[in-house]
Amino acid sequence: MSQELLLTTAELAAAPEGVTILFCGPELALGQTATAHWSRTGQALDRLAAAIRFAGKPGQLLELIAPAGLDVDRLWISGAPAGSDGAAPPLAARREQGGALMARIMASRTEKVVIVCDGADHTPEAVAELAAGLKLKHYRFDRYKTRRKPEDDAAEPDTLAITLVVADPKATDKAMKRALAVAEGVVFARDLVNTPPNILGPEELADAATDLAGLGVDVDILDHARMEKLGMGALLAVARGSARPARMAVLSWNGGKTGEAPLALVGKGVVFDTGGISIKPAASMEDMKGDMGGAAAVLGTIKALALRKAKANVVGICGFVENMPDGNAYRPGDIVTSMSGQTIEIVNTDAEGRLVLADALWYAQDRFKPSAVIDLATLTGAILVALGQDHAGLFSNDDALAGRLAEAGAASGDKLWRLPMGPAYDKLIESRFADMKNSGGRFGGSISAAQFLKRFITDTPWAHLDIAGTAFGSPAGEINSSWGTGFGVALLDRLVRDHYEG
Ligand code: BES
Ligand code: MN
Ligand code: ZN
Image (cartoon, rainbow, N blue to C red):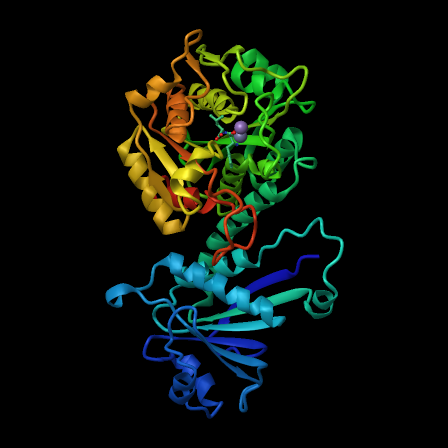
């Protein structure tokens, strides 16, 4: 039912049609091709602009409907992002501009759009980011809607064809292929987070991971028996209350040098988190279908890397479990033994994510000896209190890795903010009966969770991203109208591109 989106490029000579979009700079300056189109309308741009106070700023739009002299339904002049001090605008701004334009394109109900990307600022890379923004904002999750509002049915075309008119179509196609691969990874992650928990259990998530084998990814799925043999007592404790058995997905993308130690990405994949015996209140519990957002980000990243054939070795390791209350469920007071051999006293069955990660992190280091390990998890409500929904929490034992991640966050739009760690916080999880307990209480809840994870890191550079505030439920933004955001995919792709390739 979703509208199909077609994105293609064409040479500058391509004819305007449908909704044609031109960009102008701050002084209402148009590029050469845009000027040629505009002049055929016979209109004075400065007069029209003054009449509606259009100054060519990002987000501003000047519209002519069925103008004389041009065979188009609408001609739009869009303000373009400007760089500071004459520098090119940042790529994230291009992506946001694509998103903002898509919102208007969809509202216009058109099926044909021509976007004129002329001028020196429209490098292949810049146009590719614009295209990614168009695609990401176009995404909708309506698989479970059996009917639309009658007015929508009548008006929405089945396909939307957008032509990006550029100076160098060949180079732009190449850049676009990469950018759209990343967007495809983001969309994959969004789909997984949006899919309801009755449809997407641990086995179904493992199936979704297995599908990536079609792109050249090595996929190994561990079932209950194999995990038990490996001694994954922490992860398996969480799974005990569920009728649906746990799985672990191990994905390897080997696009780099043979024998080079991989980057390991570890994801929390709790398909639904009721809290277990320490059950959550009813309000908004349905949101806990998104508690596999970390795993979705890892799978989306592996998909993006495979689609764009990244020259890096990256492994993705995700634990899939459901946290349910049941006669067979684990309980507060239980002591479980993790794969590392360390024992954990359960004081709250709702602090389950760290138990899943404890065994997944250990397995990742034990089996792959990675050069670095990054985990992503919707781990604590406390991170929402600390950072809200605009930044994910970043914790690390390595300043260089933390710095690279923060930079990739700023560049990709998946923003991170580093929080402290230290022995005083580690004290909070000391247990009277076991090596540690699984909750350090309310104060600094995100930090004591990170301290818990750190106990399962040997001497590998490690970072933990708490994405409980950013993986789902954010207010609609420039490039996202979806509940599940796909947070983390663009970030990790950026990190790999900047530091793990070539
Ligand atoms: N999945 C939740 C964290 C969460 C909360 C994610 C809100 C997204 C939105 C996690 O498993 C959890 O329940 N954490 C507890 C930890 C506590 C019991 C130490 C929390 O944050 O309350
Ligand atoms: Mn929980
Ligand atoms: Zn959880």
